[in-house]
Image (cartoon, rainbow, N blue to C red; front, side, top):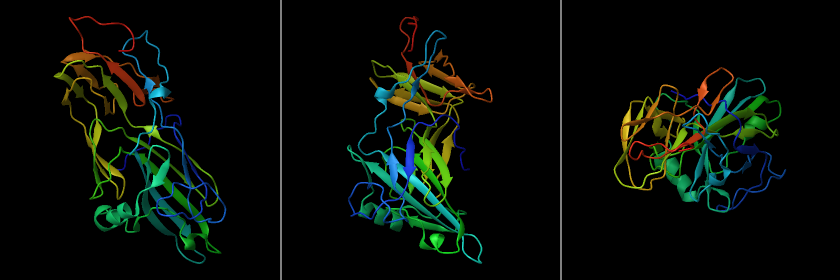
Length: 303
């Protein structure tokens, strides 16, 4: 089932303009006006998580210092074009594309990656749209969408951060250590658009000093498989146990007010990061630092 996008504040900007043609390994070029069919994508800083509280007295603060793109990060793009030719019926084409961070900037995937994804990787999903047109290193408006007499031309642009993997079969295997961010918008030819990437998860940092700490999540979800052909995902929804190694990193899950978080079978009460306009408690987009209890004591603060 196609997942709904979140409605929280913008945290990452994707600005779509036009670009010129480039060589195979060039980075994303600067916007120009000589190639009006091309889409140009400018990516801002990585969205920061906000510190969440486990105690009422703890304030939530922004943590931008921890929000950095890392070498190998990939943003997948699902780009769907629609238009109505003169005297005809609505037509459409859909492409998959991706950008990879190399430590200094963002570049398209390699030519070989593109060949692999088109020959053995991203395929139309069973029962999916019949207009799927393959992987494109540089998505562009179809020429017929911009022809004289064409009306109602628009593009549906979806962006997904799903870690660093490039799957050989078009199916990404994810886990509780993979952050997920999504965003989308629709726009017309020649009109710059801003896309907001938003966190799908709450982030839990277990401040662990020894092996064997057990993290248990109940009524929490995470995506374990992502199909790049139609950008749908499978969720694991039941409670699960994780053995946390010493000095482990971050763990991600979709949390709500029915979720339970335990360390070594001790319950940790996570406060919602905010209340949305509908009165719902919001946990996703917030980070919670959890320290295993020692001798039954608790240190007040953001733990």
